Length: 300
Length: 300
Image (cartoon, rainbow over the protein chains, first blue to last red):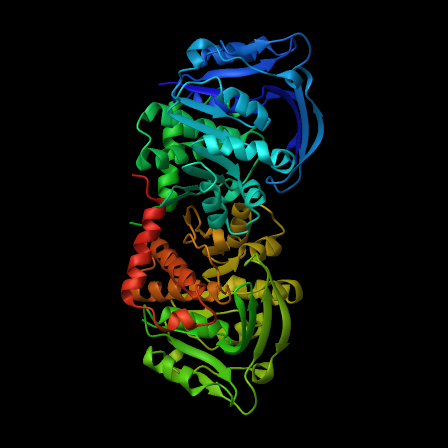
């Protein structure tokens, strides 16, 4: 099996109540691939500029992330600057410089095209569609998006939705897409738009997974100090899809466990700025927190 | 064992997206006692006017709710009018007529004073304090409150908090009381104010229970149609404390199961206006939904 992750690699400048970091490495594909690398050896598709640090490339290699699909282009890497207040669920984008990401039109390497799982992280839905034309019968296609595309490219987004199996969104995005305030209703409406599975990420409230005739919920790890929420959703996707790739049989049981592993990875990501916490995780840390998640909801 | 519930009995006029009902019977003590009656035979303390319907008194009796502590006074019953928009977590109080509830100063019947569990539902914290002076060494004291008292009678509220074992609040109230946005931090701060257990009700996100060194979470039942959210929190308290009263040993395991039963009762309450759904519940309904809650979070 194999998991292809297509998304952004970036420099982020982040301000949270815990401090400010300038130009730390981030991006949806970065976070997602690092999280997934604890379960499988993902294939990374993205673009970086000449300024992207070699040590992060080395980290990717060390974590057995396949970089055949990573372009290095003349110019500067995508740069995002954001600020969080005391509520980690709300952020303000201060600056956005697309740079080399501006004309990103990836051609998937041959071995990527037959991958079992394709993850279209948050990028322009037209680009997501372009990529789907390049793959041959993946077992699973998953996608993420943000409010920006829901507001500005709804039609393209709805076209992509029809072609994917799993839709991951956060609470506000699911509500915005469906014009619903009730999350269960929002999830069911999205199921009618194409995907067989909807995963709604709810920050400190955890996540919901909706299938055709079942619902599963996972709580957030009880965390008192959200140092930097950036990338939490991407790490959820990485843990979720990384585990599914490893599990091979995407039945209900595997999907539920995958959602817990997604939450585990997200809960680690927010403990430090950028990708810091993801660099030095151990398999034991993941196992330990997985068991904590079980304890958190068990009442047998 | 025995559970004393002190709170309001009322006529409610309610408007939700599902319709409008005028003068249906409600009140925190009404909801709580009915919910608790599926687990134990609670003692009710409250006051009603001459206009309170005999059929509800009969319903209380039929559900083996002890009414020795229920006063009937000359005048009209407390009347509350409220409106909910599409978000069931937010309501607007349109009208409030205290009537006979205005000078409510209950004297607990002798047999109530030695009860094992005392529940101070949402009433003026000064009144809650008054009542605590009348009881002799209850095994557990639990309290609820609303934003109004947090804003206007914080000192009295903090005094009561010091004397109780369990504090139940909704998300906004817990945040308001502690000036925190992070729920885990809010819960831990409240633990430092007196109680050994804090239960935070989060509407469609379920509920969190925080003990000194443990956290437990229960999801909300996946509900697409919240017909009337009124009384959900009181029904949670009723199921929670009713089960604890029945369980006798309030260890961690019983507390966790109690929180699930609380969620079960709340999830039924919101399916219809006022107390309608609570009238005709069967033990089997409760058992069935309890198992559904288990399924919702199990990933073994």
